[in-house]
Image: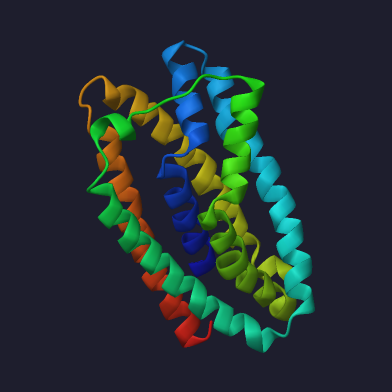
Length: 204
């Protein structure tokens, strides 16, 4: 149950944080093209996550389990630092910067997807968070860690669709709505980072 909750929490954080793909999706929502908007939110990240899951799975089958425990410590610390840094930087962003959007073209979708792949947060998640969880599966059986990834997928894609709807709805009410959503996501990220670090410390 703790893995399900943690996976869902991590997924919700990722789904709430604005990204280039979300900005493209928002443009489609404004044009009334909800199917395209949902496609942009779900399909490119699903392809990226599938590839990175395989890479992480095989990578953590090769390294000793003793090392993965320390990697988990690093993951918790990085999450906390990233949340604090994001909260600090969000104070400098203007409402216009937080409300930026983009059009849907093959080029823009490709660039936004590559941005997701290249983002430090993507690699932090897969190598220092999901990786040690996969290593637990190697030790206790992979069915043991399935709830983490199921919770993460449901949390991420559910929160993604919901956050785009919220941003589209809230943008008409208050220009700083996205900024508040970004703030909430980073506070949740800080909480998840602390809980993940405690889990690594307790040796679960």
